[in-house]
Image (cartoon, rainbow, N blue to C red; front, side, top):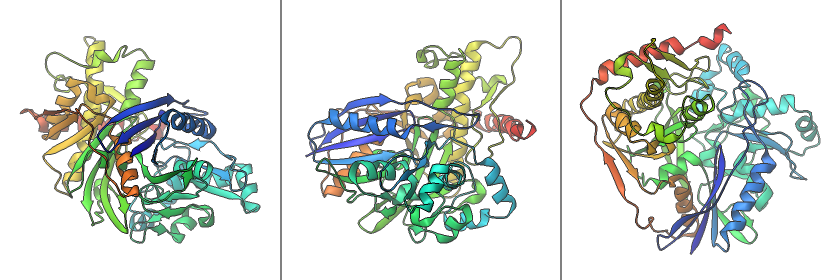
Length: 473
């Protein structure tokens, strides 16, 4: 049996082929444009994404089932009859609804979103984005008046156009701020709060199951990319955790059948997956800027070839008083402060380009450690954490991360964990299992004794200086 897993991410679309014998390979990959119409706005072209998915499927050849993972909070509107996209994809990083979120916060709406959806008020989630589309895009308003409007995250658009199924899954719905975590259904009060018409939203289904057919091949899983990575890392028990370093850095720790709420720590209860009537929950914590901070540094010439980030000699930049706060898009967990701005602090006339590169990596690791510390206050996170993503190619970054976490960091030579998790879930939707990738090896980095408390205090001071900066502009 052969499974095709489509990993539709923030910067690219990839297709992984996996079979029951442990043969796993990337069959095709293609990048797409990042569109920035205004400061703080981030969009994708929905037709471009669809075209890239089709190209990936064409490269796959004959398969027995398809799974699709998606960006999570990115969303759009389309016509129920023609399938035509009526808006761009508004990407999870986009903060155009920050003013509306601030208004809802001032009205005391955060209590409702925390109680029902388990999420804080933030432009990150889909609800305010969908409401913005309804309010500001004439084609969407016209489709609504004609009874033809469909609203949803990107997975629902892909499934509708490719498989004729207007549906999403529990994991993706849990990222909208419109799902009631207790019932697993759209919440009428949350929909009314944000101004999102519930009748325009897709049906919610389990993560592994039936999502229609694409060219005669069943789609048997749909899932958020981070939850797919959690599954692909082999996390199955309470406290198992992973960190994926992509555009952002996203940590998830399983909490089993319990919904763990920790708003005081900025953590998000979320759905890890839904299978055969059983829901598994997780705690989620994110850093908005990880790989995106590296890409920014490359654009401005601070970093050339990525090999420059592999090794640094001598003590850490932080121990020498130099810190970087990766808040290009604001701060997510545990601060949830969109007014924060990125900064370097502690520079002198002797500061070099290499010093800034070192601080850049350390800042991403330190922000990630803040997230894991918050999780560990509410669930017994294991002594070993699995990691994947582009930044894990830097030995310096990995060791610094292990030191700050004071946990062993586990890195597999097979790093397509998101797509592999999607393939596993799609196989389960068929009632089969696929083998682990053949020949994969594991590298484990143990934490060293460090001045961790002093490091954290210094970095916390830097974070406080970054917070609120955009409020002065």
